[in-house]
Length: 479
Image 1 (cartoon, rainbow, N blue to C red):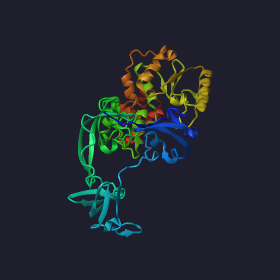
Image 2: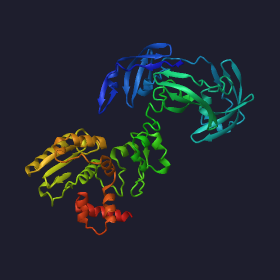
Image 3: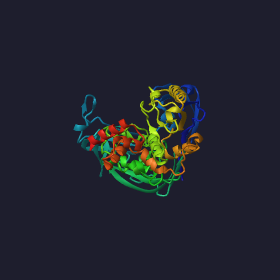
Image 4: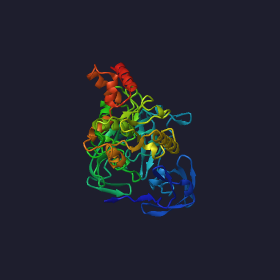
């Protein structure tokens, strides 16, 4: 087992709270020391200054260096510790033509470059030059060896493989365990492949923590990097926490070209796609985060989106199943005293007003438009108005758009469950209907029953006649 022991200890640094996350307060950390270990070296680093862009100035002995905070966290402190490469090396580029003071690689074919690399000395010959995308490559000949190298790498004297100082052998063996603060993996396979004309070594590994199996390039097995793509939540594990397993209802929003992501991503992934509406076939022209689709149970289709949140559509189905005469978004004709407010549900037989409260009623939501105090103030006014006009007022906690949460919330709400009996509710059907646009449901029902009046459709779905007319007009234009 190869133990790679490098890291910096931030455990004593001050912390600041930010919404649901906790971060190091780098401003307050200035002047504090943090312990480090780098292979056999140990000591303390002094945080001298916090700069913008998540940069800090760190001092070790008499040397200071500006570094990114995430690089410091990953133990990238080699330069600060003044750990020098003991290999002496150099290349003489004097034979290469110059252009504007820089090497003119395009006209360097045939040039001889004297070099030394530790105990090896000789001449490199440039036999070809070619630009590829944003990089430039030279083909170098040394004795019987011909290899490609990037121009930036030859300027850094990275010629070990060309001159035979390093071999093509793998650095890690199959079966070898790699363990440190950033990884706990076992190498189970290895192979080579070509990338831009360069031979790359890669390894298949199995994570000893989560048992995920993946591939990684040898260069990325750096001790300062997190290795397991599943542990770092870069990728999901098929059959465990992927979209196809945890949220199969989302699959219909993925175009065929993105279908592979349902096995590679979690439902909380920040990856963006161009989703397709499974109801009208519209493809969004702007990318939408996978996590947003999961949160909203919708892609916000510009053509058939009804603007009705999942919890409200969920409740409409609940009332349909228990055959309760409850009106969704009652108009002024039904409750003239409500102006200028809009209530979610009204039971005229029992004179009950019901409000379906989303997350904005319980915590600050930046995207909502109103602060939490403004929302609570508005709730208080609506409650007072409803009671003043002789109604019972019930608030339903639907802060999370999830079937299990809403089901539990309704059954535990004694005021609600004592009036509306939920024993025979098909919760899965409520979930399905909650994810389906109201316009689609209304339009399809009207198509199946062309002779019925819009008023009857409105009564069927417990919505206003205006919403029925709007749904039919919009969907008629789409078909």
